[in-house]
Every structure is written in structure tokens, then in C-alpha cells.
Image (cartoon, rainbow, N blue to C red; front, side, top):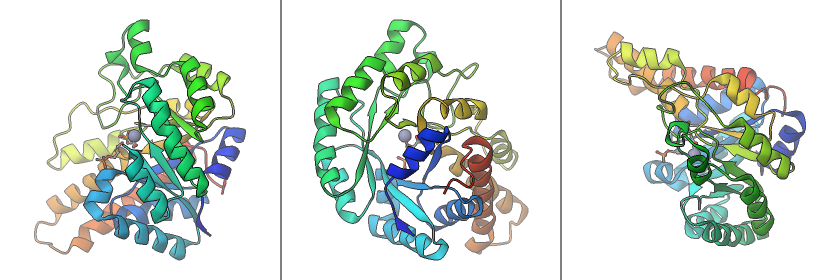
Length: 309
Ligand code: G3H
Ligand code: 13P
Ligand code: ZN
């Protein structure tokens, strides 16, 4: 048990057409809910930390909480930096003991993205840490209605192949129509699977990553709204599409919004039903349980990663 890289996880996932869940963590209850689910499902696990999470919880707390989770459960866990914006933050996380970092140069021109990524790859690989990069921009498909607009935002397969070759990156996040947050599609959900297949055909050995992959479970949205929330029209990536993506090279599925919704729904419900209570453990415990249930469902029914540890 201990901190592990994603190397073996992705090799197995790529081979067997399933995906590893990468869950964003911000506090103890979120971490506990996720690791309990991974333990229950005997599944490989990536916990990821954003710059926002580092700012909110402080790096040392998150690191020690994940360490505690390993001690408590005996799990192997990959600790990953999510959306590192420059070399500096990637270096800090490598030095802190993360086993994986993302350098997100997707907003920069192609050559600059290559340069930034290669710099991080050189530093990280030297310390045994793996690197994820991103090519293409995460915009919903409604923002890319025709082929030339899609080529401007979505990942171009030939560029993906050139990018991987020139950077030596370990995994690549691709843009095929997903987006971050709870409002992913205005009309029918649609992902560009032809593009995903073309990318996978050109770089079959490179694990692909799907950001913005929350399914935005209707039960949690409904519960939030029932108990005083205001999140109308939220819509995520249908579960079937995540299953399909994992058959075409997607080995890592990023989930944050679903954790936020599960936690918020339970806290809202508890607060409304128990207005006189003010012990945080009373509302954080059901929130943690909801995270465990949601993550277990995802691992077993969406990612197909149960018993893959
Ligand atoms: O991709 C973004 C993740 O959902 C993290 O969000 O930057 O608000 O922590 P955050
Ligand atoms: P969601 O907003 O769909 O959960 O995506 C999270 C993510 O991509 C983190 O990097
Ligand atoms: Zn993301």
C-alpha cells in the first residue's frame, strides 16, 4: 500500500477497456467517502488536487489526509495535481510527493503548450512522477457547431500524435465536447466519438483523459432544488457515454461536480429537516455517506473498475 503512479493503473485500464476514476478532493469528508467506496469496490483510485483545493485546505493538510487514507484503508492511491497552470506549481507538487501532475497548457498556442509540457515532463520523470497534459479546449459542443469551429476547440488527432511524440507525456486530456461544471449541454448531450476514435487510433498506447466527465446525477440536482437550492437545467455527460469513451482509450475520468452535488444535496436536506441541530458532524456524516454511495455506483456501473485493483 502507498502512493503509486498511474502507470500500471492505466496500462491495465487500456488493456481491459475500463477507466479509473479521478476524484477531486478538498477536505476530510470528501476523501473518506471516496476511499471507502474504492475500498468497498476493490478499485484503483486517483485522488486529485486543484490549485483551488490547495488554496482552500492548504497543501500540507491535503497531503497528510491522503496519507492517512492510505494508512487507514491499505489502498494504493495515485495523488495527482489537477490543472497545474505552470512549471512552478507542478514542481512544488512533485517535490511534495505527488505521484502525478497535470500541466495544463491548453490555453496556450500549440508550440508553447509543447514547450511547457516538455519542461514538466523532464523534471517529473527524473523523480519518477508521471505527467498529464491537455490539448484542445473544453467547450460544450454547442459552442462548436461546424467542423472548422470544432477543429478550433476540440483536439485535432494529428496534433495529438505530434504532441505526445514531442513531449513524452504519459497521458493526454482531450477535448471532445465535455466541459467543467453542472451545465454541460444546452440541448441533447453529444460527444465527438469519431474524433476520440481517430485520436486513439493514432496514439493507441497513450492513455486518454476525460475532463468534465461528471454525469450530474438528476437525483442530487433534484434534492438540492427540493431543499432550497437553485440549480435549474443542470445536465452532465450520460453514463452510457462515459462507458463508451472507456472503450476508445479513455483511462482516466475526472469527477468533481458530482461530488459537490452529492455533498450539497445531503447537507441541504439535513439542514431543512433538522433546523435546531448545529453539530457539523450531524450533516457532514450523511454527506460523506452520499459521496461513498455515488462513487461506488460510478466505479461499478459507469467506469467498470470494480475488482481491478
Ligand atoms: O477542473 C476543475 C475542478 O473541478 C476543480 O475545481 O478549481 O474549483 O477546485 P476548482
Ligand atoms: P466535472 O466538473 O465534470 O466534475 O469535471 C471535473 C474535472 O474535469 C476536474 O479536472
Ligand atoms: Zn478538469
